Length: 442
Image (cartoon, rainbow, N blue to C red; front, side):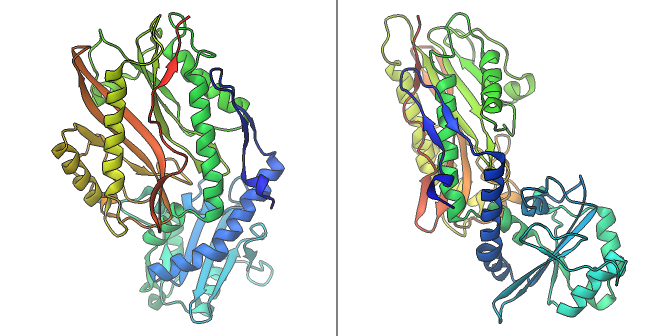
């Protein structure tokens, strides 16, 4: 695969930012997705199975009701599982081998070979049992989990059917694959990170175009029109959004809504006016990866060339909270430990913080350590107790409330950027917002 296959070709012009992204064709996307998947099976999965101490992983799904983990393992030409699809991964650490087997009528693309001959063994469940008995694993891991929905993919019917075919001595070996399933979902490879940098860059560029004079005419354009512009822009590029975007407005003469009020009532359709502080929440999906970004823009009043200094300083306080949070990232620390340390430090430094950072990757709200929720700032039982591992990506999502004497009120700086935690520490996947986007008034 050439280097160019890993990059978007994005042309944009400042002061009239027009995104013109060359998105890969469906055929080229499929080839790249399958190449990445092969790399993950070959180089990542054995390490994860060793880390979690599991030598057999069994995933069972039926068409249109796929286990969220199994769905990420399907080749690009399989949009869904077929009939009942059963995958078996068997790791022999001493031989340093990983067998990938499908108890299915078909090979699962080029990565997983069918190990079932229905002519010699018509019963799919018995064929699965034969494989398990032949391999004689120490543990048989299934995707069930109390706290992590993405690791809880086996349905009741398949779970009971599976247990019904197991003899008692094998039932004793059945364990949860929770940590392995999370590890598979959360861990990013070097090939994926090359793509991720450009995907986040594209997200930033779309926001910059949305919050520009090309798209917004102050006094005429509404916030809801920008929301639908974002949706349509992504569709026109041949991509998808994984959630409906939002655009909201803070202005001097209107009181600040709290999170609960804003969440329950939604964001109203307001005409954008000079002097407004705009905010968006926006993310896209491409090549099985997801972005999640929140940025701010200021609508210049006639005669203004820059945003008021007090708003720029407010944004700097949001950046300061980001710095505090990411400085507390440490491998082996739980999400709750990172959250509480960051909140305490931020308050000591005079900020009014709220942190609700989540894993990001194969899913938008992905698996891994939850670092706060907007309505759970004391820690999150279960998902917040999961520990930080390297080579993982997070939506660094948070806000700080800032008093603005010039407006006689508080405002909320709400930021969200993709950040990578690696062996060498933390970095933003493609930078972060440090200056307000500016929209001139005509």
